[in-house]
Length: 480
Image (cartoon, rainbow, N blue to C red):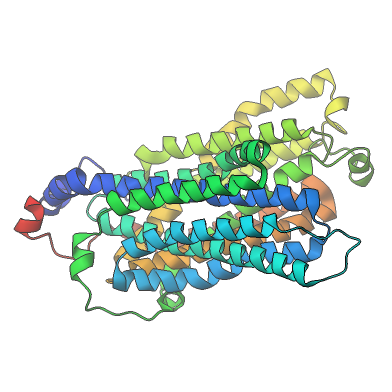
């Protein structure tokens, strides 16, 4: 097995650039890099909190479910459309303008949602009227702006990390893992946080969202520094749709099936798990009998179980950090798929042990407790896939001068598309065969990812080394 460069031999492989990274990067730029990670965390928490507030408002007061769902899903229109464009533009104009624009649009989106929520809303007894049209228009604008917020932030943030961690694979592994942690953790933290904000402030909680975005803007404005060479290199121009053109790159289109499959898996599990567990009885038992994980759990129990799985996943990503720069990326991905298989096997066996939680026998309860360490092990193994995938994409991006934002924009597209497809197709699978349907869907996604990873490994695509397309910093920049 051919190993990636380790932290210990970075200086041996590239002593000059390593010295530059240590003096210029770690002293000046490291705070800027980690400020990007904090910025992404604040953005994820703010956006998900806004979604929770809106969901509570609509669920309690609004009756036109079909129209509202169509409006809410508009989030993906701007995210998937603007991500490739913003990635390419960040290659031209630098990353910081887009890192600033994202929270500004997020704050504006929260104000639109607050304005819509303050309108007197119709009930199911009221026909479609101008007030309802204005309400839906304001919600639509808010959701479109929130999609644009993610579209501007993610490619620029990942492009910035790729720019500033050249010649430092160990640091890149740490920062990319941190980015994945805040992406998942920010969403997970925002659910209980948004619930508390809604309880205390109601729709005025959107002002808390505005405050989070304002704090984000201050961090970007005063802590994040544009990459020196990014500022000086403005001659290179790329197409606004460069992200889609990158699909012709063989290393990209052979990797994307693996990443799309895992993104769909995460989307299906995070979106559907609580719904499946908390499906009300006795309807759940009549629909899919002898399925423990289909219905019967209290909402508090369901959120606790899903939260525990998310916590194990986050901790697992942290445990993978020392290994990301020491093992082949496909080796980590294959280990992650083994973890997925272990999770599916354990959950499928446990799912058949009882009709619902109240009918668990003492023997079945003992079996579940005995299988819990295997489930945790599977989650920890699976958690290595996403940071390895993100590191691999960053390495590909580094090979294309002036197009790093475009490549990472494509990564952002696949992330959003996968989560949307995973939730939609996963829901159909659940309707077909309950929790077992979700497990079958997970197996199909795992097999698709496995084929992609095996192809990458057999052709050595993961043996690419992190090489900068830029010369070492000049002496005067290094001194600064």
